[in-house]
Length: 403
Image (cartoon, rainbow, N blue to C red; front, side):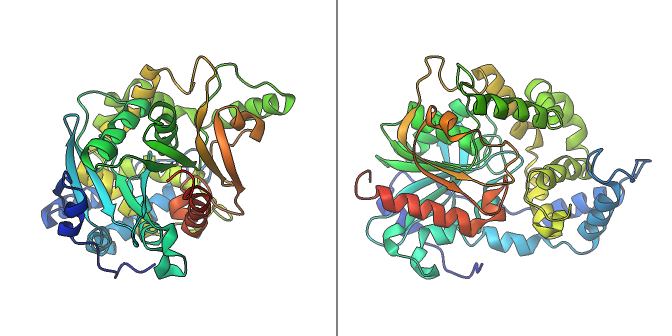
């Protein structure tokens, strides 16, 4: 993927979006970077079992190898250049300075597309898909499939300020709908998301269907109030619960005592790396147990550095606490569903295994269902070509009837 294409001019964007926020650029100082490297280099490696592979958590040998690379070879400024290829803005939305990338699409009538990340991700997950979505003609596609791409940093994550207290995905959906309608002036848009972005997009389609006209999700986070109904659905639910037992530790801590965890994490770049990288490995479609079959060391450290440099490990974890306060995964106690057209991209290594189609159809008005040949939880990073293609396919079925 090339990052050499010039970005849209701010004046052009402001001409069509007069309430556009303030131009924003994140750039750490060299002193900031040096402090991180110093902490990594001085980390005291204590006795840990290294004969269990990754069964106990992040593998000792791999993390030591990664940290050696981090100290001696990783160059933040290579990644800064990737960030700087796009326009960044910050708008004061409901009292929170909210960051977003904004790439104006090609052609006379691009469809607005709001793409939302999750945890342990950031908007940096989307750097490979923004240009193909906004300018498909540069990649052999049709300009008719172009999107205005808006990729916000969720409140408390990365380049956005923290909310005054934990927000769950439903509150974040309301927040991002305000960004799209009151600040950017859109009267209709499409939403896409994985991880927490899938939950946020679902609430956008459920609560804000006046504006959010279609959804594309690559995860199923929502649940029925009545639970599974068919034998196949019951088998899925039982297997899902067994599979998630090994994942529930981090989720429970972040949903109940995120502040306690944060003291140790904010003091240790190596600790943050261990906490996040284990998820990238266990949730992705890796080969032969090798995390670097999908991600390079540079990829991993870049994503970890976003959390470290913005000091948002704590507030990014708040969304788990917020969802618990909002009532958990249940979409509607009245068993209502999302009625806007919904596309589901089913990646085979998704950590939250998809239920049978019958279950999903009771939650969403599913008009496109794609079972992918490869990829896992971080679809925009793992299989950007498949995700873009599926979004464009979905959009082509809607553009004459919905947008």
